[in-house]
Structure formats: C-alpha cells, structure tokens
Length: 175
Image (tube, rainbow, N blue to C red; front, side, top):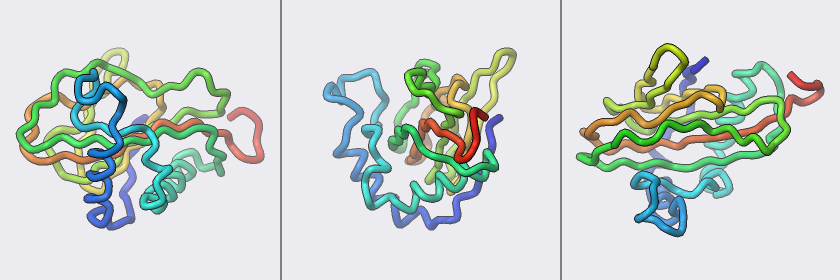
C-alpha cells in the first residue's frame, strides 16, 4: 500500500528555497504556539512557481502509481523541517483524508530531502510499519492510512514535503 518512487530531480537546488518557504509561510496564525511541529509550512507549497518541477514530478508519479491519467481536484502540499538535535515527539496519529471532496481517489505522499534515521510511522489494523527517510525518495499511499513522523531525536537536519491530493481519473467513471 505504501509505494516508493525515486525522484529524478536534483533536489539540492530546491533545498534552501523550501527551507526559506517553511520559515516564512507558517502552518497557522498561532505559530509557534500551535499544536503543529516546528517547522511546518502552510499547505500551499505547490502554488509557488519555484517548485513547479517538483509538482510536475509528483503528478507524474501519481499517474504512474494508478496507471491512469488524472485530474487534480484538490491539493495540499506542505514542507516539514526538523533541525539537528531537535526531538520529534510522539505526535498524534493522523490521516490526510478530505471527506468533503467527491473524488475517485485520495492519495498522499512524502518526499525526503535527506537520509536520516527517522522516517514516517504507519499504523495499520494489526501492525506498524515505517518508511526510511532516504534522500530523493517519494512514498505514495492512500490518504486514509494513519501515520505520524517517527518519534526520536533527530541526529541531523530532516527536510521533507508532504502531500494530500484528491484526483479524478480522466476518461473514466469512478475507479
């Protein structure tokens, strides 16, 4: 259900722009006193023209994943930065479903910019599984999967972008 894909982009050219975006486009008005983790951006990252190639690659991967052409109904994309030595606490389990949208599929993803020991933890009905934070690696999964950042002390800076997307399949009914 969680499928890895290798990014074909040279992500280092986006790194500083994404960090700057994260530090200037906060998750909410209450930042840094909110419940979100430090540092998380707003959910409009792909609206920024600097990241058009990342956006294009993501949607190519989603089409490859479903083996169908897609039409995007909604997209929420944010960045998540954890500094070296910062603790990732046991954040609440969550999913990215957006029930208010009528779509053929809800899909989520994460793209890691760094190799770090802490990835993403998923809770299934009878077991837990983890993704490894591997540089230039996308992971794609159904948005209803419960997950959270893997808790622990970050031994190095950890940068990733996360997505929540609703799609319709082109030229087909419900799929």
